[in-house]
Image 1 (cartoon, rainbow, N blue to C red):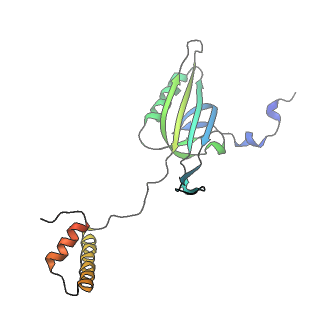
Image 2: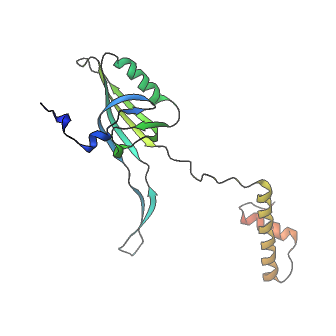
Image 3: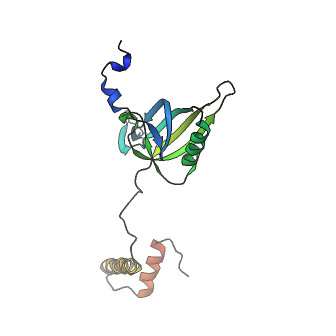
Length: 187
């Protein structure tokens, strides 16, 4: 006699054990959310807005899982330790569309144990895509380059004053203009 498991389904072939940082759990339900970051610009006296696409929002995952069996307490403690560990970890969900081996940060979680359900606990977990730090690869400007750029600005101001005033400004005039342009009050 054949059973429902004998029916060939492509999704069964892709099914895998759910885990976070190697701590296994079973999934009751999983949700993945994302979208686009949109800034809507509205203008006075105009009826049409302008919507600006600012990129994809981070992936987030809401997982309702459970642990069951005579050793569920050990599995629960291992999962708690993995959820509370610092830094990102690998989330493996049962199906690819929910997130297949993706680096995430664990957010809040809630473990519920009920008296009538011995050997069982349910776990609500929130995860957010880890990603990469912003502006990766941008090195801070060395002090010598910063000072050189400041000198270039002072030279440009002096040239501008010379062309508008008709005479070469004194160092005191250039410094006073420089101080007021960067928000400092001359002493």
